[in-house]
Amino acid sequence: MLARHDGQVVLVWGAIPGERVRARIERSGKGVLFAETVDVLAASPDRRAGLADWRCGGNVLAHVAYERQLHIKSEIIRDAFARIGRLPLDTPPSVVASPEAGYRMRARFHVRGGRIGFVREESHEICAAGPTAQMLPATVEWIEEAEARLHGDRARGLSSIEIAENIPATERACHLELEPGTDARPFAALATDAITGLSAQVLDRRAIETLAGLPVISDSIGSLVLKRNVRAFFQGNRFLLETLVRHVRDLAPESAPLVDLYAGVGLFGLSFAAAGREEITLVEGDSVSARDLEANARPFLERTRVERSSVEDFLRHSQAAPAATFVVDPPRTGMSREAVQGILRVTPARLLYVSCDVATLARDVRGLVDGGYALEQISAFDLFPNTAHVESVCLLRRAVENG
Image 1 (tube, one colour):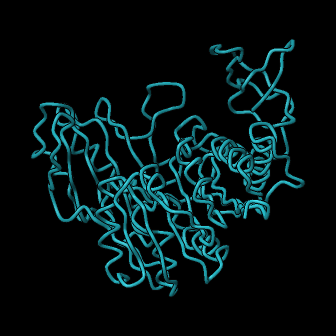
Image 2: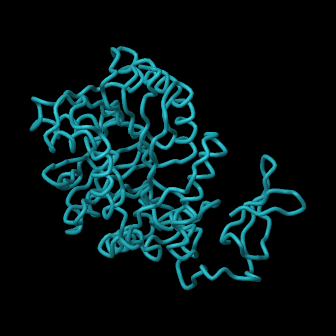
Image 3: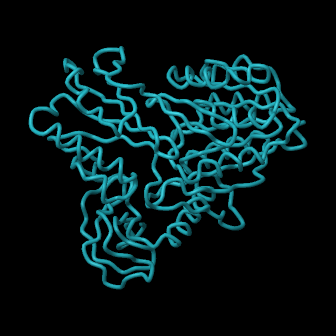
């Protein structure tokens, strides 16, 4: 949270806007001080107690009542669009709420000293995932059992564990990252009944070893079935996934050709195909996600085309598409300048921008508006309860004067 002391900007962990706190300065950088709350002198009515360490990964707003979290995230979006995008919003966007416990379908855990968990913010300390309540109890039980099996030297060489689950948690796959020179075979002991697939990669080798089962999980989203490797990107909130997909789908006119950039395993683009839409192009450059995308698209070959390509390269060779709707869901770093310029060159009629980082979203929307698009609508979904992150969806339409 933002405070000022003698004109100096101070970012304070563990506070709530409107509170008076005593804080300890931890470090400084680029004209900003960073501090941690050590005593609350005048508490906000939105402060709640008895929760897990708020500096344990993905938990920094856990001390704030959930309704206030939604308000804060709405204001974060409004501030970013005004300050970074120079696009003041008349009203803060509403944020669709999520259950706080057990929402997370994907997570990366670090392994140090035989402990498996998240990393405390601004430190190298491992903290237990269970008290944060992000993961389901069955997932936490597996982590605790894995710690017991890896006590002492048995954990040596294991640096991180990636877990992916499907929405009902009937499938749970894990991928292990191992330090160079580590033998992966002993880690097959982590494949309990709670795990449907286990893979590993030694970081000085390209090969992926399957240690048990199949490291692939599947989900049904309406009539669409999506299979994905544990290493493939996928949205992380099991409770709001279908709501988000329906919202994006409802923003696109039924008659327009559709191009899904950063398509991943096909979450958005193939949802359109499953709903009966024609003329869908899906673009994905990551090799793991692209393999899953091609497999997931096979039932829709007559109406879809998969391009295994970077977004920049695809746009570089694309023709003008003035009637098309583009869906973009880039990584947290946002779209590259070349990708933004590529969209401005092919001039789709509509652009649906899905983003997990409001700062890069505001930056990119500013560039698109400067290139002739108008921001028509922005909505938000709390895919990351108790964190400062929020998923946003922007609808941009090409201005009339551009065609």
